[in-house]
Length: 139
Image (cartoon, rainbow, N blue to C red; front, side, top):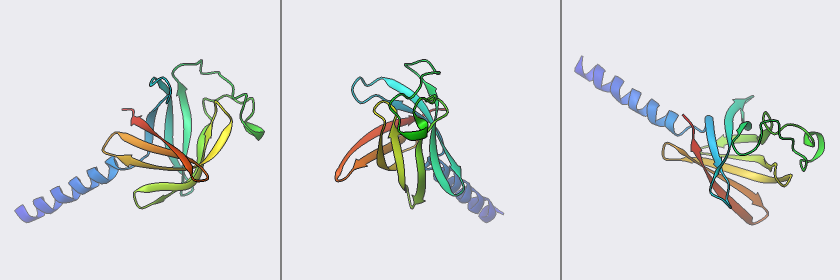
């Protein structure tokens, strides 16, 4: 009986650690220049791929439109917009998709991964150049 309890405890511990490393959920983004919280992005899964949708703007009204966004996104509300698209989980990283910067309208190749329990490292690429931001999990 003690053996079964120990096995169950180990399985539960492993499951909790695995879920802590999952990127699904809400994340607070931080402005690189000011260091202030900028928005809340929710990472969700659909059709085997991962996406990030803006669910709240923290420094602008929630009805702010994306004036610099390309194509069909131009003039659409930023809240509700997918700014991360088509990511695939490979090991502990999510990659192969794109990230949109609504402030500039530029789209970058993207990769992200969870560090610790509450940090998401989000990297946007343009050729060999990249920038990495740290986002923080929202409870």
